[in-house]
Length: 117
Image (cartoon, rainbow, N blue to C red; front, top):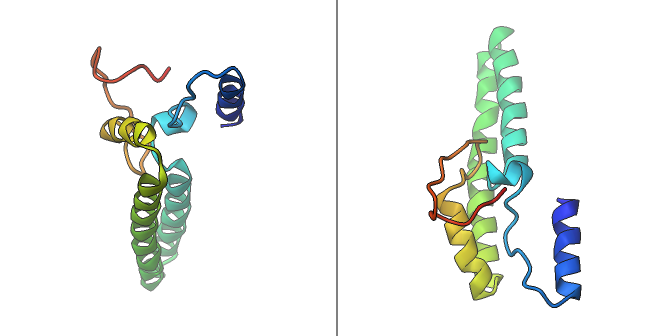
């Protein structure tokens, strides 16, 4: 992410258009990789509770999942309202090919949307 920021700062200094959407590293596979990490942690904790024959603790993940969905929707809607139109258009194209939370590879057809590598 730091390389992305530095690259955009250099482009901005030279008057070149910046990359409006982060599409490198884990962001190539997921729009919210940090949420995926949280989900993985809480799923592992839930699994441990089931293994230890404490299945009622499984209900503890339900509020987390609800808040995850709400946070994701709120964050995306807020950012889309505040972004300039060129960034929003770029984000819509990125959104079509990138999972919301899970790390997932999508096949990209040539000319489908610009290269992210």
